[in-house]
Amino acid sequence: MKVIFLSLCLALTVFAQEEYKNFSSAERFQTFGVNYFIPGLGSIVVMDDWVGAGVQWALIGTGTVLMADILINGRYYDYDGYDDEWYDPNHNLIKAVAIFYLFGINVLFNVTRSITYDNPKYVQQTLERNGSENFTAEQRFNTFGLNIIPGFGSIAIMNDWGGAITQWVLVGLGIMPLIDSYGSIDPSGIIFISFDILFNIYRSATYNNLKNVTFDNCDGFHLSVLQNRHGKMMPHFLFSKAF
Image (cartoon, rainbow, N blue to C red; front, side, top):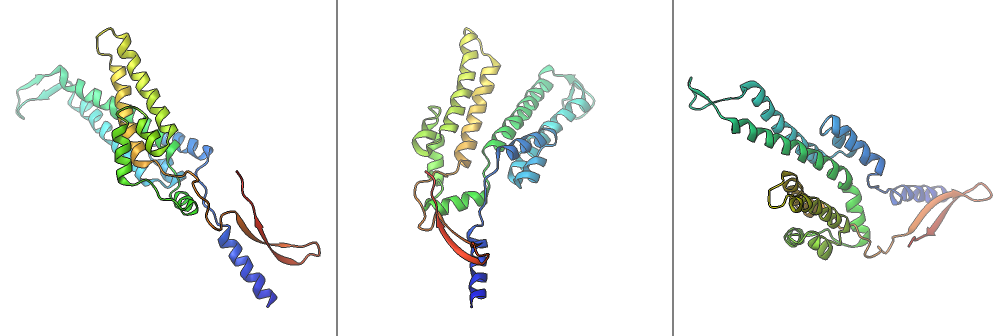
C-alpha cells in the first residue's frame, strides 16, 4: 500500500507541477532577430506563432510583388493593353510608397509581435488560476474607440500602461514633425500617426488580461515526494505565496 501511495503522490506531483511559462526576453529577442532576416521563421520556430508568421508573409509578399512589377515593367505603363505605351511618372511612385509602407509595417509588426505575443497555454493557465476571463470583443472594441484620445481606452478599460505609453510615443513622434513643418505636410509625421492607428488596432485585439486579480483555492499549494533524513521517500505538502 505504501508503494502504491507513493506512486500516486509522484503521479499527482507531475501533473500538479506542470506549468506553462510565458516567452522569456531572450526568446522574444531571438524571434525578432530571426524574423528580421527570414520573415516568419522566428515566429514559427521559437513561438509556434503561425498567425504572426502569416501576417509577415503577407506584408513582405505584397511588397515583393510590387517591387518585381516595377523592375520588370520599367517606367512605362501600358495604357490600353496594346502598343501605345505612355510614361506615367506617378505610377511607379505610388507603388514605391506602398512598398515603403508595407516593409515598414512589417518591421513594426515584427517588433510589436515579438514583444507582446503571449504563450496561449500560459494565458489559459493564468486566467484559470486568477479565476478571471479574458477581455470580451466589446471591451476590445471600446478600447480601440476610446483610444481616439491616445492611450485613454488602454488605461480605462484594460489597465494597459505599456500600450498607452507606446501610443503616446508614436503620436508624439508624429506631431513634432507636423509642428516643425510650419503649415506644410511632413510625410514622417503621417507615417508615425499611421503606425499609431495600426498599433491601436493590434493591441486592442490581442492584449490579454493577465493581471492577478484573485487567487485560486489551490494556488500556492505544492505536493512533492522527497527523501527524509533517513533516506525514505515521503510526500511533502507545502504552501508558498509571493506578494
